[in-house]
Image (cartoon, rainbow, N blue to C red; front, side, top):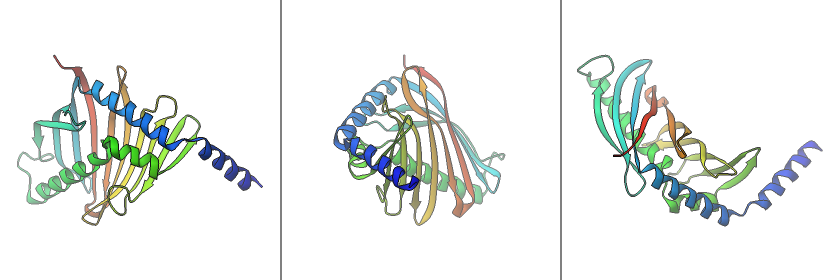
Length: 209
């Protein structure tokens, strides 16, 4: 009986969601937020670990390009705890670079992709959250679950599972507000095929002069 009630409630909530209207509202909110974010510059710290040992550390300055994608300028880069990285560290660093670039395609989707996510994906409401979930969205075998605040339609979190040349890539993305601008706070990547974990954090936001 409880299961039947839960299913009924779920169906009722789904019926209340106008996918087309939501997709347009979310994409409009995101576009406006990107414009606001474009007025800022900030620092991004990336730390990559393989089997618990740090293999790369990169500090970058970041701005948004006109098409809503982050542009990173490296300020400082080291190969873990060594000034000159070993071949294994260099290979791990390149693997991490490719994985970060892949995940960025999911974090910073185009307006068209966001519309597709809401029109083709599964939407659900839970407390103050609006969830959008999709499979095989950008790459075959991927799985996305994006969480938005149901009132403001701003990002709260992203859970991304995808493949890079057949290797699994998992990312957990959390968001924060800087002034009134919604932006990525932290990204945690798990790259199990190479026993690599990556932590990215965005700090020191400042308006451009």
